[in-house]
Image (cartoon, rainbow, N blue to C red; front, side, top):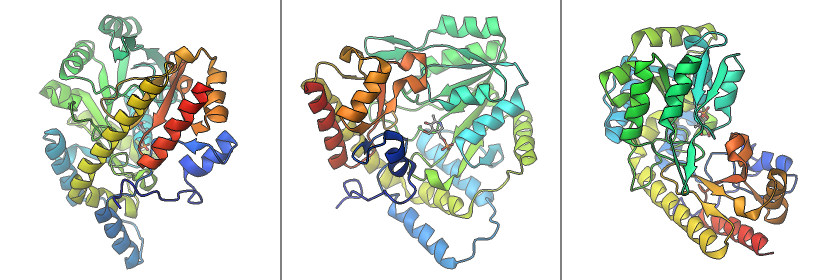
Length: 389
Ligand SMILES: Cc1ncc(COP(=O)(O)O)c(C=O)c1O
């Protein structure tokens, strides 16, 4: 059986997606299709590397060394045609911690920070938690597709004297992989107005076959010097619980500020098993990744076709990247709390509430499709039956 069709029991492993779901949805029968991790085992090479590290038996302080940085540099060049250098890399336990660190070290209280909504909920809290001013550039939703209002983007930057722009590429939850042209326009506006770009590219390895991810830092030397990119193998290879991540920036001044801030929090290590997983995934995980993308593409098409054919009420926004589908439920004509309750109680599927991504997410739900086909089929059938009723 392929690793992508095997159903592995996750209940009882302290899994947020499965064990916490019971608490949140208050029903053991709800099928969890929410939190962004996958119901697939990590690549066998990673499991073997971890097993052998565990068998060693000693888990003392471990150095995320230069060799690990070379592995990262090679991965970025191989997958994204991005030439970086070892000294551009700073380790971090996760992208969320990286965003918090970037906000704290690169801005001051009340400074304005721009985000594009609807967006992954921590984008709001990393701004608000540190008493910075949140400025939004809502994405434009037209003809079932999302785009950027560049006039609003520039006006907001000028009017609020924005210091930092946090980009999400690919975008969670709307599934856009921003094109080179879109990135160039955003980047030019940021350069013109002295706005530093923090680019969250955690989903950048999960791109469907018709699309291509362009790291914003690769646009030009100026872009490279104006950008901090937050990356991680944890979404790509399903390693979120191991917490190993990193930031990349060519700009030495920014890097020094960031590193100083990490050091001030006593954060300058990675966990032993995270290091092993990161290294083995980037060195030996590529074939598995290709197969994963085929599986996700199948799931994306399957969910879209069935929901479109078998209901009139649900529209799946075409996903260009990520394993998260953004579903337009406006035709169900339900209030947000009724929509949540409908999915949970009638359909018995645990989706993410669209409103948690911001005001613009109302009447939408987010579905995680990184699971064996059996689970996906069950989830989709449950939704269709509930809508029919
Ligand atoms: C856009 C985005 N950034 C960051 C994260 C979480 O990153 P980490 O687990 O490395 O903190 C997620 C997880 O869903 C995400 O979608």
